[in-house]
Structure formats: C-alpha cells, structure tokens
Length: 211
Image 1 (cartoon, rainbow, N blue to C red):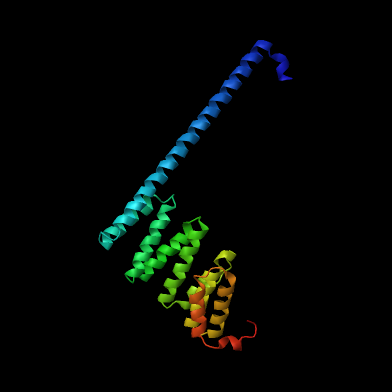
Image 2: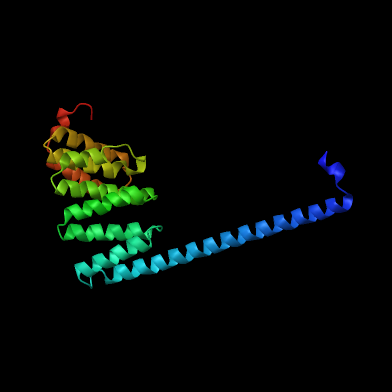
C-alpha cells in the first residue's frame, strides 16, 4: 500500500540509496574482517618469534629471568597457542628444579585453556606423572581415569598401570599394562617398555583369567 503513494522517480532514488547503503555496509564489513585477520596473523607471527626466542634463551638465563619472560609471553600472547606452549616449557623446567606444585599448576592451566586435544593430552599425562611424584596417587588416578580418544589408550593405560603398581594393586597394574600393550600393537617403540614392566611383575598374568 505504501508504494502506491510513491512516485516512480522517488522509488528509483530510494532503490539507489538502498543499493549504495548495502555496498557501503559490505565494504565496511570486508575492511573490518581484513583488519582483524591481519591483526591476528601479526599476533601469531609475533608470538611464534617470541616463543622461539624464549626456547633459545631459556637455558642461558637465570631461572628467575626465564620465569619473568614466560609470564610476559603468557600474558601478552594469551589468545595464541604459544602461551600454552610456554607453560609447557615452564612446567618442564619446574619439574627439573623439583618445583612440582608449580609444575602441576601450569599443566592444569594448559588443560583448562587449550583447544588443542593433543596438547591437552600431553598436559594431562605430564600432570598425572607430577602428581605421582608428589605422592598424590589417588588424585593422579582420578585425573587419568577418564575415557579419552582411542588413540591415547596406550599412554593412558600405561600411566594407570604405573599408578596401580605404586598403590600396590599389582593385578590392576597388569590389567592396565596389557590393555596398553594390545591397544596399539603396531607401535613397536612402546612394546619393549611395556613388556619389561609386565616381566617385572612376574607370573601375575596366570592369576588373571580375564586376560
């Protein structure tokens, strides 16, 4: 009904304005996307260079200076994966210095913040090992005893076996080691270590008919 009261000339002008507005909005949107995309690329590039420099200098500077640099990188590149890679390096150094509580805090932060499933599993496995070293066996078992992707079964079950063994639960340890061994039988590098652990446990296999 509204169009009946508009002349053809007015309608043409209205259509032209609408078209120009659409073009301008589209151009602004593309420009904004380009700027954001370029900024993100530059941020990732800067973070990559900073991480490489951190790794190069980590062993050449004092632990205190290394921690300060790590804190700076984690804060300023928190929106990139490199912040979590820095945390992983800091956690490793903390373990080497027997600062286990600090190590587990960094590994926990990685698990909370990363979106990379592989990095998540690396942090999870290392945190379980650190908790074991701290004598927190039940906490380590609770952390690791959750279903994950099948590709991680071998690593998870091996850690579970180590925890059960430390808890004195040898039958459960054997069960986990066998699960680990048969989960990915094509990975030959893992077989000798798992077999050695099973051999060290003697003939417990015979006591486990379910195996």
